[in-house]
Image 1 (tube, rainbow, N blue to C red):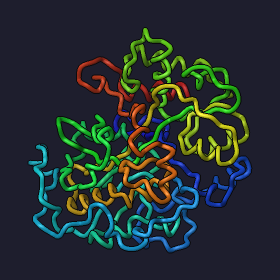
Image 2 (cartoon, rainbow, N blue to C red):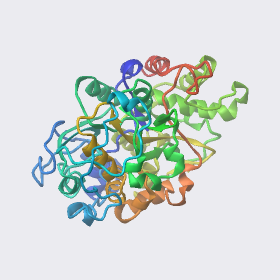
Image 3 (cartoon, one colour):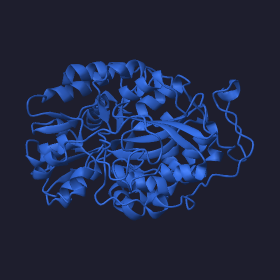
Length: 455
């Protein structure tokens, strides 16, 4: 679940809603006794932010992305070899589509017959773990096959850990494609800093479930601005006696909660059931009174027993040491504990919050044809299969549910779309309540209240 953005987002305390999972160091070593293994995987060396494509880091490098690596990750054969088997192969050169940042770019793009000739280079901005080029693990490389077949060389791959860092990068540097968090995505759309996408040039788009394709943060005025990539959900997990009710995370037990302003939405969701008089509908769009109530619920039991976690290793250590007995976590965390033999259960009561990451075209991409080729590749089963297996997040394209991603798809109930039905996906809190017809608090309000709570 997300990281946080520009303008009103800049006050966020460097949090990352998704908690970019760093569990590969643990599981890759075969460590299943979590209390002993967590410290061993704690240290990581960040990859250089700017890297030439493909073979920039020698095979066998000790560099680690700081994100996740799924247990026993092995790249699919079509990633280590030819990428010709992907859903959306690069078409032969034809007339180039007009970059959406041109004067005509404000209108809905007209469907194009095919992607134009490669410009030769591509500049990307994403989160750690979302794009791997072989630096952390030689087999984890979904840049090289893209380059081989597209004719586009990734000359800049900038990766960040939080949305604040991404916002700063977007302010200072030029990119063709960006993969923002939901709260940043909505801001980029509203400010005209990303372009509408001609989905006719992205064949795999129609394979993505309608629920993800129609997320409000990815659409505006009938135009599509984002291609869904990976998604996740928040669960309340616990050990010991069954906690009581949806507000268990905020009860007397020592708890671990994500350190992110959008975690306020989870408290609001709990209140939606326990205090119907508040009339909370969307937990990400709250009036002043509703925001007050959600923060009050969070603050009621705040104290030394409360852990606000940013890194998955912090959560793992806390649960392993039994310093917390209830926690906000993901299905992947739950699976990790169960595989380690820990009696961790999930409190499965009603809907839950989640997030979906996407790929977007910047307003004026220097290489629009290479950018579309990238959207094609990153929505393909091959690329999403590798990304899901690496990050522990669910692929947007269900056809990616094979090989090493099969277990992840089972955890998130991707096949058939069952896992999407009870998820309330994150979006940016807006003053107009997101629909232009309301009086709500905006993201800056959430950031301010969260900083006062967490310190």
